[in-house]
Length: 273
Image (cartoon, rainbow, N blue to C red; front, side, top):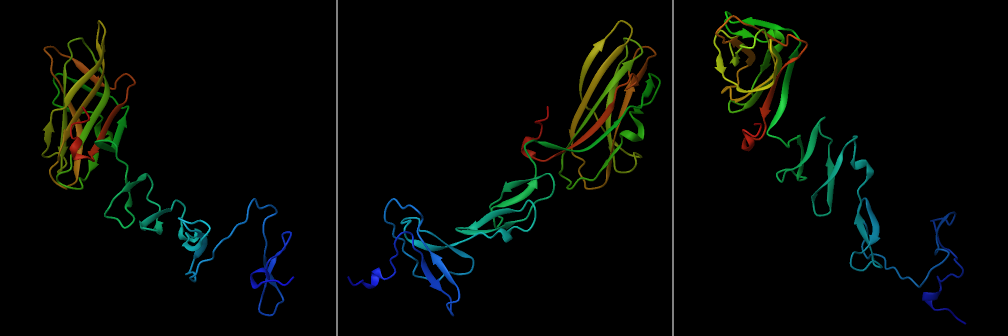
């Protein structure tokens, strides 16, 4: 029986179709899998591919094959790179961000993404100073700097409108049960030859025994320096009492800590309370 042209390339029993090279010294062979549940017909694309395209199934008719854009592994060049779309079916590399940054949506960026500082709160901690050095005071003292130079913070606001939250915590030991103290937060841009004193919001936790007071102090204040000069921040305290009294900050093994937070979301000003 004669064969039609369509039958000339038909093979039986998983026979391969051989496509020879120019001098027929080598060939590429195509063959069916060992078992096929039903006849399959795949239609090749009518157009030539462009660079880096691969053969894939058409979305509406999967038996029609078409050339599709591929994402090459070489698109990523550095550990942590992210592949992001700049438009429909267009993918590019977004380089890895700096340590501790997070991926954030931003429609003004080409990829719609950018690396940014982590958010999630009104303030972010920028400085923290601690000391276990005791600071002794009595009712005859002028205001005394708590913690001395080891508790001093120097900072430069990025803008004159930047707001901060200063927080002090420490353990207080009073020599009598009549000890009273008042905290002051001072900032200066001229080594404290002139300074701004701002009263803290004063929140005291602790206990009192029959002979003396021992307390855990927490003082905080939101403030705005108002310029981009270099500023310094210190904690001062003074004694108010009707009798002679000695007060020691962190005098019984506690730790003084001064922490400065920068406001990162102006809409949340005051949310620290």
